[in-house]
Length: 224
Image (cartoon, rainbow, N blue to C red; front, side):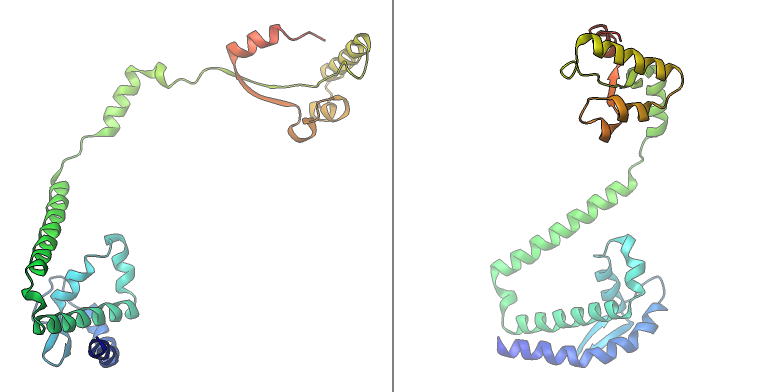
């Protein structure tokens, strides 16, 4: 284990300069990656353009352009590829690749990758229906389903009969009504006359109600 960590450390040091030198050349590489263009070489191991482009595909497509603009991230990926290749060589030398369970793990990983690629290829060939057109057609036929019920937004000025007699409350309510009819500012009247403890924060608002619900409720409210 100690030997493996030593190899990893030496490999990182050796690659740090080489990868930076390759970055500018790699940006100018052709659109079709090849296995002959060597981007990194360490002892008898190589990382090619095809290796690099294949590994880049793990990055979501929307993030690839940003990735390619970062020399550090490219350098890190190249080092990772070379390090994995080096460790894989050590694993083969140790006979790990001959373990039946390891061999089966490799096969399962291949199958999983192929399955995901097949799904992506299948989805790319799908012809999606014109949902916008279907939605418009459905709306034209079922417009009533999308109509919002009529609503009433109400506000009030509460005249509390607990603080005064019924007659006093009625006179005060009529006074407030007259001032509002004459053009007084409702918000200001709420501040001056409402006994509702929440009125200062909500301006006397009762919120919105369905028109039918408000009609039934208002019939139970005494008129000032």
